[in-house]
Length: 176
Image (cartoon, rainbow, N blue to C red; front, side):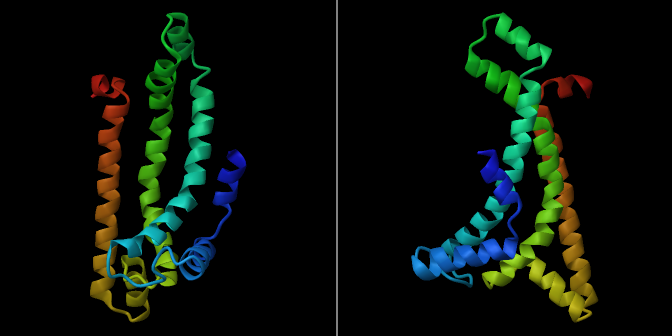
């Protein structure tokens, strides 16, 4: 499993998008090739972006779970006779997800930058392509608008991360 996660980390967005487009659109005809008319046009680009990030998060969760499962509170829960599913999900996964949620919030900014390649491959009108075209055209109001939109998205993602912290780890509520 970790070999597949490492493989997905090494893929380039434009290459994976072209491979999906060739095999799943041209050869098999399962998805539309390009453009945007209905919701199904977004499935292949979203799948491309998801596959690029899933390997990184799989490795991150694996390493965090390995570290958390050797913690004293997990050993104490097992010693008290808690069922293994409760130990894994309530004690292990909840605590292992805290760094994952943090990095997920920070990756929103990187996703806004990397989505431009996928937009170009699938001929989608998106904010990444708009931002790059506005820089080349020296269109300052559009540049400012895309930067402000990106900033609002990043701030909103960080706010969601802070809310998720309180839901994941009840100890955070006592600290506030």
